[in-house]
Length: 237
Image (cartoon, rainbow, N blue to C red; front, top):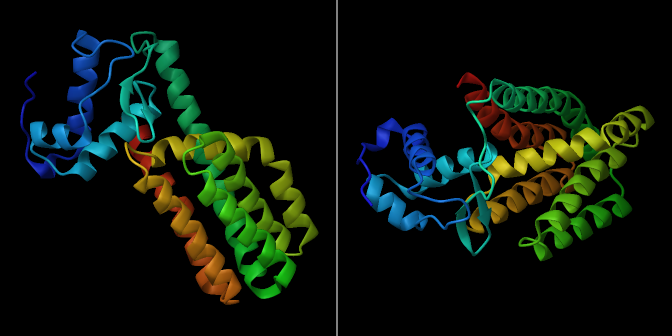
């Protein structure tokens, strides 16, 4: 197996395209396991973070699946990009995710700010318990995802603003879809991504616990903006 070596500044998009071409050509068959992040980084002559970002993009588009602790595998059913409707479907899904992220920025930043001002000891206990659940389910995607959603809903609850709570609850279904797609963009080939996501939630918790309204709002905005940045890159393609 021979890959064309590239310079690091060319970034993950070229890596992603080359791996995708290897899959399309049949060199990597459906359900087969890809080389490790370390091996791919050596083959492409780039850093591991570049490989992880490329694999994240491939996963978001349905070309690979990533098993925590088990490696990266070619999807058993590959996307049919030659089908214009399928390509449009991916674009539409990405566009919808961006719209949900835009709404989340406005609502959740406000919720975090008010939560830092109004949270009770009971609110903090509930948030703390959810963080423990997230930590205990790092390798259980479905359970961890539900805990993630509960965390954000709990922040809304801690705002003690009935309209904001109702708005967040009305978005629960779309929020769940948004979380799932966001996490697909977040998670790479190892557990450090899941742990990094957990750490971001801890930082939001700490800002609310400290009753720092601005810091809580800023950390929620940064948390959502990271995924938004990836989504915008995908929409440019």
